Image 1 (cartoon, rainbow, N blue to C red):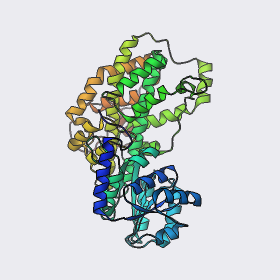
Image 2 (image 1 turned 180 degrees about the vertical axis):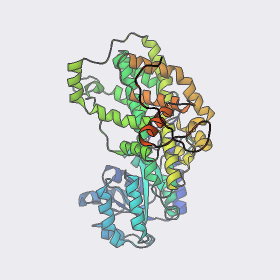
Image 3 (image 1 turned 90 degrees about the vertical axis):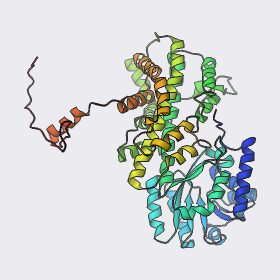
Image 4 (image 1 turned 30 degrees about the vertical axis):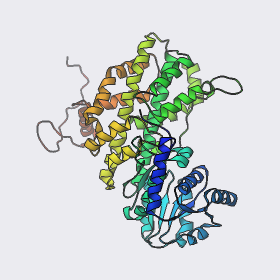
Length: 499
């Protein structure tokens, strides 16, 4: 079973110390600038300092700068100019500021104090096209700009995140031992750090990670909804089912999070916190970026998109309540076998999670083919095995599948990975049919199943779409029996029956 801890503990702590020792042996007391000392930035600073980095830190709040400098044994800079002046050339400055305008503002303040050969690393959740723009702009002054996807939250930043680095290999090379040292450990002890490719690949891969995260979370939520509100299981029974699954093939950090949710009681009422939470889910935008990227690169990633749509639908709480009162609820009394549903959900959830990962890697492959980043999908899968939010036991077989088919349209061509889909196929259909028959919306389960069915269907419905496009727009179509692009002289509309 995969260890899903955010960072080193016990035997993993020893591995981290060995990685740190390798780093210390490689470089002597390096200096690194760090701007942005919020929770993530401060924890990352402590992690870096604990592995031998000599830091120069700066935050807009002077008291925060002083505190983090004291915590890390680093130098607190009064401003950006002082930070740059305290760094030896070639300088490297790590930004941990919110994505968007704050990154551009930080770059603008730094730029007059940097020169050719210096480097800026953006460790926030930046939009990958913004990263590409910044790289091109700074390259005119000979300044390297690298985008790091950092996953694991505040705890991961302190104890060991997964790091997806993108950018110039030569600029990154001097710091690779340090970032390997601070990263999470995979179950085999390897560092969850990799330069995934050139350009903006680091931030793109992180966005896809977040899109997969949205979909995994939606599947878990739908599963809980079916157990609790369709099958009518009490919280204790549902909690034990989740806890059992979290120790088996469905082992993942997100399943562990779900168990923690179900174990938590309100200290004032003693009731389960989950039962008091409003059924709306917010988003920060990275899921939307992934869905939009799928459209941009022409990739089928329906479950990654549906997970975003599901959050949007959840946000219509007032409208949903009003329509339920006006039209009546869609949910019907459960007429099925509760135990059969419980048995079906585990293999169905596993198969759907495989389909979600396949969609994510298809998107990475398509983007890489167009952008020329040189992304190795095996490295991506290996980085995701520890530290990040989507770490799970599935990443091991996915890494193997990526080695065989990761640069193609789908990793589901891998026999061993496909067996996981096949093993859950009947149960998955049973779950979707039960849900639809009883008025339970399951957008993630349904879209993932449709995706898999579409991939394995040799002849789909798109012949009618292609024909209609030629009828009204003369867009042309291809034929089964001859090469080239064709048009037809379409019959006039005649509504008369011909039976």
